Length: 240
Image (cartoon, one colour):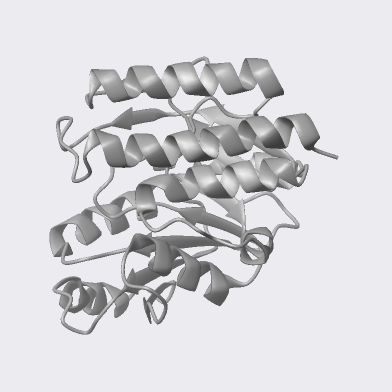
């Protein structure tokens, strides 16, 4: 069970033409996530091939909801629309095609119950692990995450892990500038850090199912990460 006194967990999942992934995700949610919770499937259009499977799964799962993303198409718009619908309380963002370790959800909720408004599963925390993925990208993320921790006390070594537990009301107060999903978690966390929000990391195991391939060129994600890295540096120096 979730810690007593907490609002029920909301899980926000953007989807785009991935019926097989959704079935696997629902199975893992049922196995690992303690009730009560609501799973929000965020889709961009009625033509999404995920919807027939989602509606079939929904018949005997009252905790599964379908919501159309009425903001910008894509992951960022879907996450924003989902958090707006949730409004407040603990909200977990994960992707349908990921191998995020949902078995740590009780730990995430416990840390939220301790007063942390963002809880960051971290591949690079002591006890965390990553299997697969680009070696160069992993090395860059480890170096930048560790350097931020040393230089300004940034609370997580894993800067861009999209698998993250947020306080929905906090995120709804932030102005989101990201255009791509791969930078969103970093933006939200560094902006919360600048506000002095309580943030904590917990170790997680992450497996790359795409064997290191990325839809974005190195230059694109590197520029985005550098932008938020500098923002975090400045935030650490000037935080209240």
